[in-house]
Image (cartoon, rainbow, N blue to C red; front, side):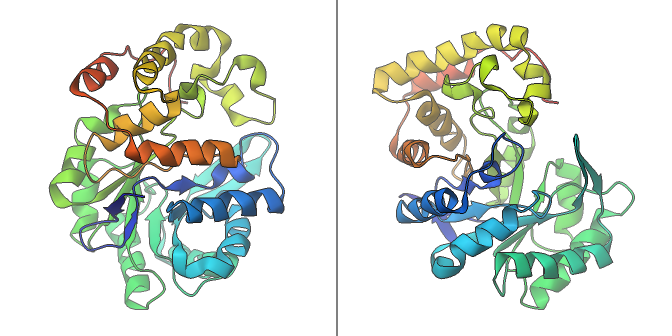
Length: 314
């Protein structure tokens, strides 16, 4: 697979990464360990080397750790800290960016991931009660201690990135970005591109909607998407025009909607590394092939002209 760099001085990783959350968290029925192993090992076989998880995703780190343990040298492990799970019905979180929490949480992540070092440690959300300089300072100490290789932030604005970067170099920013969530294109992605900071779009396929394979009837009560405004039946019907526009471009290339949506992201800047998640090797292989899809100027113009979605993100 084509390679991209995880930050100005970071590791080379596959241009498409893998978000492990859907394996056993928030997207309905979790998969068994055998299926999870099949998916992650196939990802590594395909050159999808960046594997992303978080300590807030229930048992996800433990699952990833068990699967990756035997192929640790092939994987670039990314996890997150700063969100604390407070409930599961419904799922709820608190933010905690205190230095003592960061240090203790890192030790637990290392244990669950069965590794001596985390390749990319990301602040899941900034804690408004703790200056970001203090949080990143604790993360920097973990780098100095050899427990973390690089630091990233998630869902932040440029001003926060500047403050954090004054404490320690920032290797990545992870935020939602896709053909129906474009906010980071205005300021955050240009900031990343100017400094060689990797931008990791999560939900790059609109939580599955942009693939054209999802209907409101597919969402069970256990699937957190069922409670999101964009996944209400009326909103999904309105948003079909976005899916249809993607499908028109896909037809020109003999590609799938997912491949077009990922190729559009890759075309935004060389620092972009999407991290789609899936439970199935079929879709994993489809996503991996997007790294080789080159969209024309007309394709990009048509995709850029797609309407804004009906319904908010949350």
